[in-house]
Length: 203
Image 1 (spheres, helix red, strand yellow):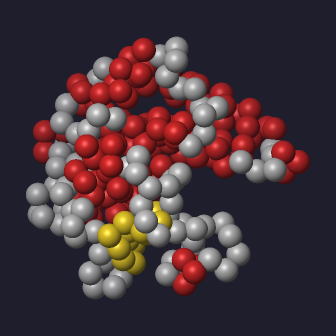
Image 2 (cartoon, one colour):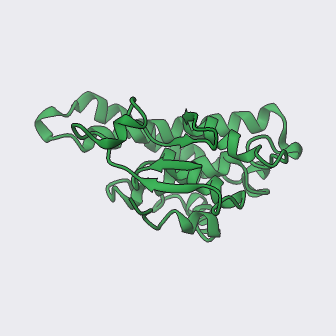
């Protein structure tokens, strides 16, 4: 299989972490692509130009980090990340949705800040900065939840992918004044699967 990603995409990072957590590094080839540029060769592979994008062994392509993560997690018929048996309840779903909300808001903020200054929307930036701070404050408490402290799961993977957006955009200071979130993040980044995403895949 081939997994198409960009280095800065937190959504691609989610799927890259899953590849390693599930021991699929020998089965899934991770490929770096260029997006948001005219006539990128990648557009012939995925017309939407979005990442991540998984081309399965049968040649069929799949888009969306959640869908790809679920597919990879269930390849061995023993899912452990997307719907862990011990966490199959509404509380788990609440936390994963909360983590995705945090990530989605940060993605909008970073995308806006990367625009040329004369093309930015001050209203959007102000709104998303406010949202990101509120969500980070919420997670300062929620990371203490047993589900966030238990076996690795998608809620944790999505949250650490959100926090690690600061790797590519230093203005995102989410940890300095939030010791619990910082401690939790420091623990997660020690996992081999997360460390592996610090490396840039070959084109």
